[in-house]
Image 1 (cartoon, each protein chain N blue to C red):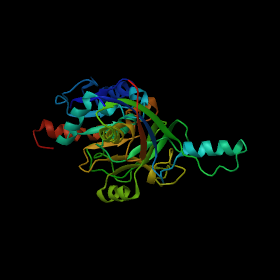
Image 2: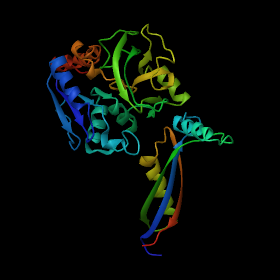
Image 3: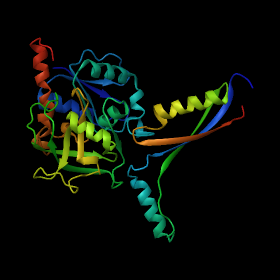
Length: 89
Length: 237
């Protein structure tokens, strides 16, 4: 693998458990009004894709985690998870 | 006393603040563009309301990385009075110069109204002219004003006296009906531990004259003049 392998990260950001999510409540109520009575809970988040370069998978994970901590999520109220896969050049 | 008012792309309360300082306080004030890196010429700073960078990602999240914010952090560290109003409050929390975060209103609706807030802390440069428990009538205009901190941080804020304003009813009582956005503990404004950095969602700069609906905001802006007087007399602040 070259020094500058290309990667694509899919980052999911959502409010921490326990933080009231009025958007989720509104969507839940909407789904129930449409007849989806089985819906128990909905939480709405944000989906971010990042294309970037890193020499190896470990570095790629570390860099994306840092990006989440610094900007993509606000750790005071939000949590995040991500997946990373090689992207073609 | 020289006021610096920071303008970001998307700020819309900057000219309101400029007018409030010039006309309401009769003090010199300048707009400072977000690319500025030296704020030493100003005796105090206002981060105004608006929708900096379109509120992309989260309100204040992008503005936090504007060149001027490094200078703002330096001046905050040096103890200079800094007031964040509405989007300015959001920016200061994103920059970790103030605790907590501001989330989408519980109603999911943009709220534009007049509210009552109670003064909880008068040992800040922005509230020293007010009385503890005093009730002010101020306008609000925001979609993301729900102040949030976890329970442990809330206890810290209470213990350190960092809660500066709370939403109340006209009688000064904290009630859920008086809370326009679902903020934790009806919090409308907080300060840093040192007290020199204050942020609030209501707009004191839009209440500096009875001609525009009220002048209760003037007392907040005028409080900082005590610091200006100290500076003029050559005393340390």
